[in-house]
Length: 184
Image (cartoon, rainbow, N blue to C red; front, side):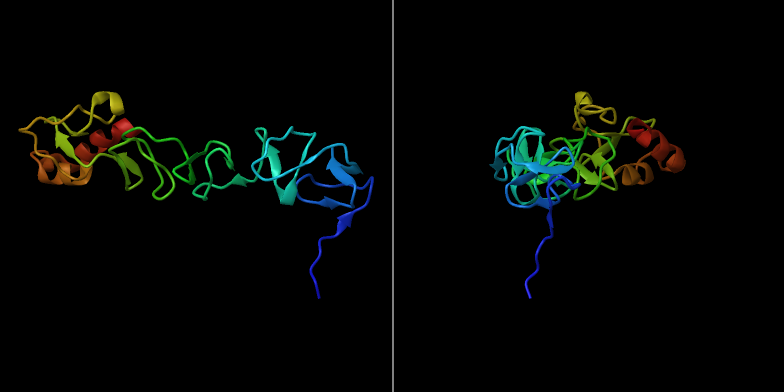
């Protein structure tokens, strides 16, 4: 037995990019009608509402593609990611997130020099300004950045270790809250 896709008859309701009309007909404005368009291969340039994309792809932003979910593999210039995402280094991800911003491990990218740690874009070091802990990064990199640490500043790997191991450990809870307020 062979599996086959049911073909939609002329004049019947169809869903563009999902249903297949009988030969010589295309799904246009929700109905199978005489083909007025050309069939475009994946990645090819298309005109929305005019051209048909092959194999279940859709004309998105002038290219035949399937919208790829967050974290999915993509080819820059060929594939289109779901709304709000871009193809970065072969994966659909949000554009790089500023220091201190919320992120999702394995999906989102942080600006250079920062990593998604415990759902926050963090640098590899935190230090104290004697009131709370700040990230070791240029102030222009994000609201959690306190500037580049000086040679006398002790660097800690996380805000938690900075608040628990520095001179601020006596007010740990307040330190953590104040240090992370920049990310809100």
